[in-house]
Every structure is written in structure tokens, then in C-alpha cells.
Image (cartoon, rainbow, N blue to C red; front, side):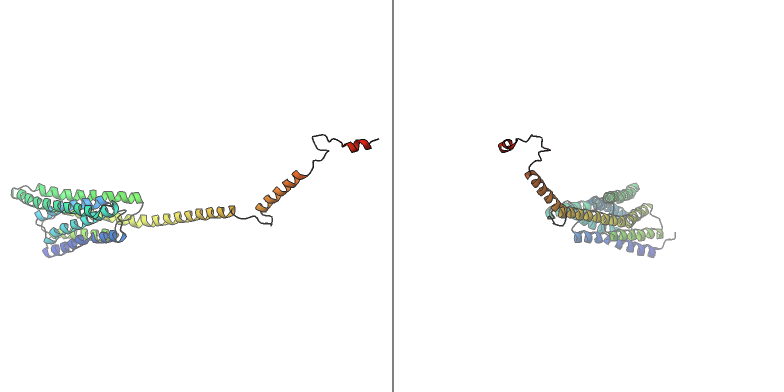
Length: 290
């Protein structure tokens, strides 16, 4: 395709802006809910690591300024979201969370600066494969990072915890950034694979949300009805057991009447004709006989 620098710069800028702020909806959702259940902390940690290699690669390739800035912003926000997972999910103290963030950012900056100068030195020596390796490592980490999120979806049987707006912005950023590559003099296959995989895997999560979430909602509604029915049946059983005796032929009064009849029967003398013990005549009856 013919090189069009203006189109490349415009599309790349739009994509970079979207990818710079894409994690913001996720951070807001986690802060609002005070929960990261359903959001894999491995996703955010691995994506933060991926931006180290991605940033080093794009800077070493002297890509457009927006594309060079984008991984830095993206990685910064990924680490914040990862820290929220540590705080809300793992219940880390604030001091421990800030220490983990500081260590990650220190490694982030130091590794990337050292990598850029090392990659430039390799280019001057005619060795370009290390830069390409960084690009492929980025692609691998982006894929690996999403796999634990698919496990969370499988475990919950629905998409929870992750912001669908975050996924939508991520997809849009990948589309604009990927299209911008077609307006360069030399097409960057490594970068295109990265953008394509992001669009594909994020899109699958949105499709799963459309399919699984309504099913999970109906399942919870049925479960609530069953629990309500069981509670009503249990309450009805307790009420029947505690119901007092009624004189209108109810079961409780019948039992009482049966008990009274039994008492009367016990108090009556046994009929001599049916008694098992022979009846002895009194002395008066003997004297009266002829």
C-alpha cells in the first residue's frame, strides 16, 4: 500500500489515545465496587510486563511518537489495576501494595531504558533479530495474560468483574493502530499480529458476556424461586405443627377425645362373661341359695 504519513499518524494517534486510557474504566469499576472478583490479577500483571517489551520494541523501531508513548501509559494503568486486585482480592495492606507498585515501576523503567539502548546497539551492528524477538514476546504475553481471564469466565459461568467498556476501548485501539500500519512504507508484521490478537481475544470475551450473562441471570432467578419455595414450605410445616387443638373435629381435638375415651374404658368394670378371671360370689349370695 502507498505510504501516507498523515493517515498513519492520525490513525496511530487515535489508537494510542484509546490504548492509553483503556484500563481507566476497569480501574473505576473496581474502585466503585470495592471488588475485583472475576478479574484475573495475572491478566493485569502480565499485560504490565508485556508493555515493557512492547515499549522497548516500538521505541527502538523509532515508531511514531504516539505509539511510543502508548505502552508507557498502558503499563502504568495496568499496574494500578493489578494493585487493586492485591488490595481488594488478596486483602493486602496499603503499605504492601504501594511497595509492590514501586518495585514494579522501578523495574519497568530500568529494564526498558536498558533494552532500548541495547537494541539500538544491535541495529548498528546489523543485528535486528533481538528487536523482532521483543515484538514476539509482547504478542505471547498479551495472549498468555488473557488466558487466566478465560479461566475466571469458566469458573463463574459468566463474565463478571471485568469492564466490558475496557474491552471495547481495547478493541477500538487495536483496530486504529492496526489500520495505521497499512499506510507506512514498510508494513510491520510483528506489530500487526499484536493488534490483531488483542482485537480477537477481547472480542471473544464480549461475545461470551452477551451469551453467558443472560443465562446466568436466568439461572440465579430460578435458584431464588426454588429457595423461596423451600422456605415457604418449611414455614408452612412449622405453622401446622404449632397449630392449637380445635373443637370442630380437627386432628388435635380428635386425639384428645380418643385419650378421654381410653380413660373411661379403663375405669369401667370388666364384664364377667368376657372376663378371663372367674368371678367369686359374695357370702350373701351363697346364703340366699336354697
